[in-house]
Length: 134
Image (cartoon, rainbow, N blue to C red; front, side):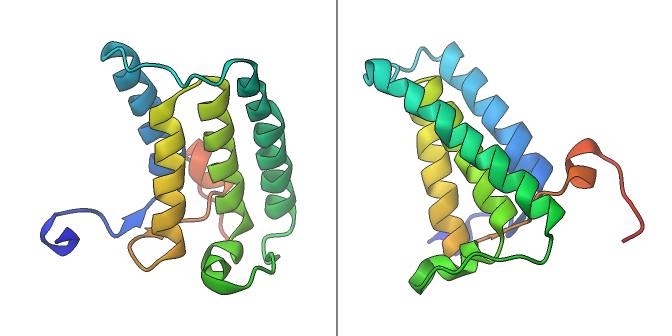
C-alpha cells in the first residue's frame, strides 16, 4: 500500500532534522493538540538531548565510526549521526511534551531501521547549507 503513495525514498538531513520537526511543532500548536501528560518527567528530555548532541559531536569527529548493535537495529547503528539526530528530536518532544514529535521520532526510527526509506547522515556542511570538497 505504501508503494502507491508518492513518498520520498531518501530524506536529506536538513529535511528530517530541521524542517519537518519545526513544521510539526507549528502544526501541533495551531491545532491545539493536547500535551503529553508526563508532568515533571518531561525533564528526562534534557539528558536525552544532551546524549544526542554528544553523540553527534563524536560522530562528526569520527566520521567512519559505527556502533555495534545486533539485530535489525544494525542498519541504524552504522550511522551514529542519525541516532544522534533522532535522540535530539525525541528529547525535544519529551521536553516540549509534544506527542507529535515523539511519534515522529519513533516512526522515523522504525523507517530508518527497515528498508522503507534511506535517512541521510547529518553533517555540519549539509545542515548549514555549505558544501566542502570531501
